[in-house]
Length: 92
Figure (cartoon, rainbow, N blue to C red):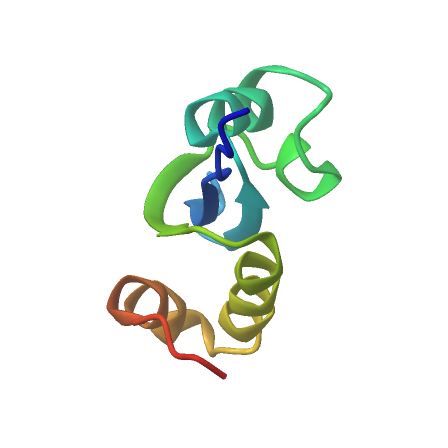
């Protein structure tokens, strides 16, 4: 049996009110669609539609994806996008 590793994405959305939302998913296209069009999107984004994808980083490990999401959320608003796009996989 072939071992297929899931791809994880940490992403940042810009909402209609110019706020930022950070999340984790295995399917970025589906998730952005859900945020914009269904009740499966986050409660936060539901009242701030439309949202658009402004940054995304591929991560090959679920645990690392959630740790990176946490680190992005701790950043100041003006630094979140740069932090995510410039992030290199550190082994800590």
